[in-house]
Length: 622
Image 1 (cartoon, rainbow, N blue to C red):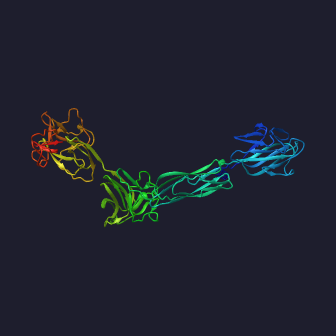
Image 2: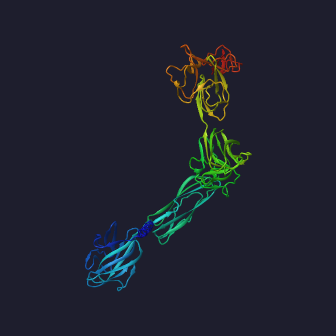
Image 3: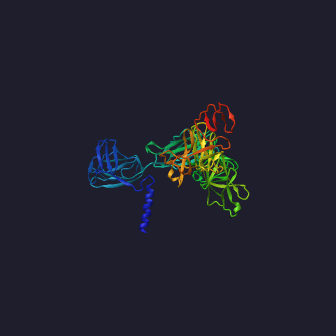
């Protein structure tokens, strides 16, 4: 029990010592052993790390006195001043004293209070006395005066070292105005102790719409405890900025407190941004615990609003609040982790895929009550029966433009609320191809793409003799994992953008790879690999050049039966089989004399440009 009591008392002592003043007082002895300097009118005394100076108005030294008391001699009628160090507070003073002569003396004055000669008598040199005085926490200077005759005394001061403190309840506050919250007010408290009494003005910044009340604080009996109100009510938009308010007491205290202000104003509302790259909206990162549409400073539940226009929403950098809109919303943020409402929308400049983490708003027992995620009015395969566990919808391809997400009831397709935890938009993939106007290229991608304007794409069917490849035009889109031959009449860079739908291709003998691949891994027994190449101005599939060991990434190839002879194997391409006489795509063909035809077999004049037919062959004329 004694150990427990000791522990509790020790803990209380430690707690009290943390308040800016030492709980346990110390003592300082002014005597022969502590004196370090002595000159006319001034002497220094040191104990530990503290040095005190005693001065007197009669330029007397503080010499040794060796009577009954071995102390310092003090002249009668001279007022002595002990200069206390900063933060030192003396609560008690004791005099162990005798006179230096046969006559008595007395303490005539202490810290401004005068005493009668009979009140605190100092005996003659053959005896001594000890007089103690409790003081009202003396700071800065302490005076005393002996009257009668010279006195020899040892003076003991009981003191504490106090530290002035000045602190704010908040070191930094955010004041961000939006379309639906055109003013904000916050309160901070200033507290301090061991300060110099007085009234002190604040150092205030000049910011449009910012007010601070009151503009000063008062220290009484060394302490202050005062509330301040900060109001920001800008009437126009202002970029994010920062300012500070300084609160300082008397310079002698050497302390101050500074309040940092971070502010911005968008009272006219943000402009919705268009998403062109990856975007994530994670409601667990909005920095908000709960924001509802229930008061006059926010939109109504039926209004479409931009999330960036909502006060109290402080998303991290990954949450693009300026790009996402909500409509029919019950909670902008709830429980610090989701938005609950009917519709959420954003707009993209590129197609892509979305991932949506969502749930029902409660637990449903009837399967017809399942709530389905719909994208742009079309129900997906993803649904939820309850608020837990969450459903993660992935791989949903969306076109460029406005993307609207909402919940629909399984049994009748009616609009329903969902809880949205996270939405991730990933831009569609793309592949850039730079062409020369006289060269065909092979292409192989593992995702479906739209054929860009100015490009013709073909698949090829190998004949039974493996001598010709009949080329067939691919319209609009190229399916994933489909090798094609592409060509353009104009040198340029063409971008093949990922799409979400593409018709399947049949009877395509072309194959391809998405990464540089060793030829040895692609061929099987009895097969020979051919790649697209040009020889003598003729473009065809041929054996790779000597020393070639790989098929390059995103290129096509053919596998044919290994010929019995050692001769070179060549497979020609026949384009647009329905047009007679077109047998092979040829580059740099002479265009003189022979008539020219377009791809529809219609004759054109000699000045025609582009992809044409001459002598039954395709040529390109610039």
